[in-house]
Length: 244
Ligand SMILES: NC(=O)c1ccc[n+]([C@@H]2O[C@H](COP(=O)([O-])OP(=O)(O)OC[C@H]3O[C@@H](n4cnc5c(N)ncnc54)[C@H](OP(=O)(O)O)[C@@H]3O)[C@@H](O)[C@H]2O)c1
Image (tube, rainbow, N blue to C red; front, side, top):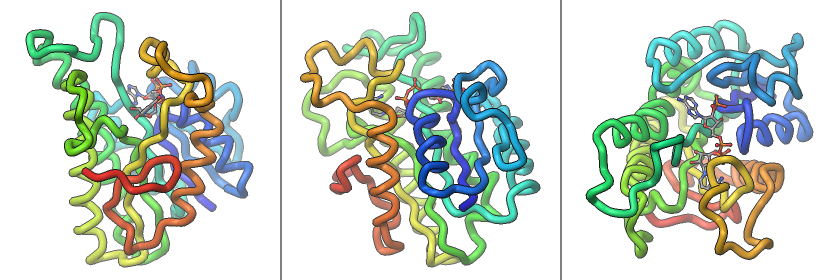
């Protein structure tokens, strides 16, 4: 199995890389913004079968170049997963009210959470469209569901994940015309013990918090069971579909 994982330097993406090897992946094509500085690179250093690429979703050229480099190296791809997600970063915090919105933060979240993944898939289009069994997934978030939004808040994170879901569903429709064996999915990983969730889970019961390894194993299993007829769907870590 040849597997591409974007965002494998840490968090759920790194757990995906470990899980992929545990279940028989032969070759990994892994990305991080700065691979050499990442925990993933230290734990899974480059080898004839582990390939690292530097890619930043804020830099469209790096996306196109990484897509080209992966296509040049991989004989084929069986699974492609993007995991990038930004919720907070220093002064950038999820908005609790309308007055907190800033164009800079809105744009940054949209670039990383929605534009980056779909441009990455664009860069891999020759492999996507080739008729072969293929699973393509992006880690989204349940809060990106518009119909499920009962609490409000987190405007830009919610909106960027909703945009990601729409991009992926639209891709599923186009891709089905070329590669009817492909499955495109967006995934909710649950609440997972990573840097992203760290400031926001005080109220959570301990058994509701998953380790990155648990979440990655659950999501991998969900992807194992999806069929082309499920393409374009949004699924939680327990396999249940989430309404858009
Ligand atoms: N943790 C949760 O409870 C939870 C809940 C719902 C959804 N999610 C989603 O799960 C996914 C994984 O998050 P995580 O929990 O593993 O968080 P994390 O440990 O904070 O990891 C964030 C990931 O996003 C990548 N990233 C950030 N900025 C980027 C950029 N400019 N370009 C490319 N990649 C960038 C990081 O790559 P670098 O290492 O290169 O910075 C890293 O791989 C995200 O999409 C998140 O929205 C998480």
